Image (cartoon, rainbow, N blue to C red):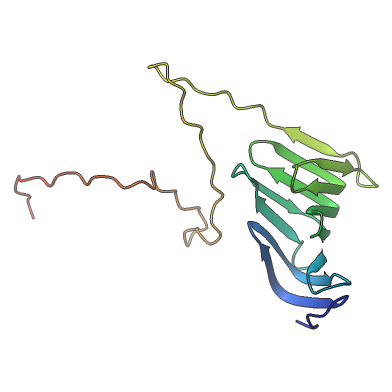
Length: 183
């Protein structure tokens, strides 16, 4: 880290960077944090790609859906909650779809995305179909399924992802058998 916490200043972070605010996470290898002119609040952050790593952003929205994004440069406007991903930009939204383009602007409050093609070809967007509610045999509406993002580091030594537990609610253990077992 190189900088200080003063109004109208810039702090440079290098190395394995993780910046968090609420459910939002920014990661990368090189970041500059710009403070507001009138106080020490964060005005905006610029995370730039290095040969080792592209900047990455992720956030869980108010509905519990994960949004992730990667690009050569990530500009985050902290005042307005807008992320601008430039250069080989990719945004993925759980339950909504994904977008690719030279420049993608994502409004974190509304989920609105603007794509620009530049010289990287057209903007590509894939929209997932709207999920239909499943009605069980008894006619009552089914509970809405939720998706939880995989936790970093939850892989086996072979690199395969560990299966999620079947339920996070407490269960009653099966009764022990009174029959003798062979040893």
